[in-house]
Image 1 (cartoon, rainbow, N blue to C red):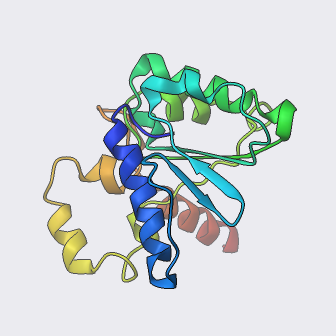
Image 2: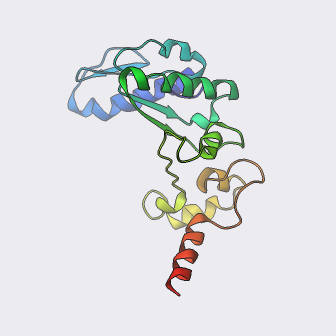
Length: 178
């Protein structure tokens, strides 16, 4: 699932096809469907999720930038994805930059460990430092007002912690050694 623009869905399929063009594979001319080695990959924009109901043998669902789906579509996307758990037990992955308080990811973060069906993984910019981002790129990005949300896992608005979680973890580790 992608955001509400069908063009984004088409772009994802085009990017997948590009991975295999060098192998000389020829693909059907369907913009939102890719069949590869007997596996059907289909993308759905968040405003057409009814088309995702009733599929057979779903094995993997990716909700891409799901925290930015329109508010009315966030819960619907989650409900449609999770209803397949009892049918074909798919692997469900959600990936997104945080958006705003009360959004999909914020609500999932508020769930207790016992009640949450997802393994929550938070990767801020430090995990990509000197790998996918140079220190110079990050220094430049830090000048942007959106840096906290785009790179440092902060939701839109004035909420959050005073200290970065890595600093808290390091301090707790040092204290336990005393």
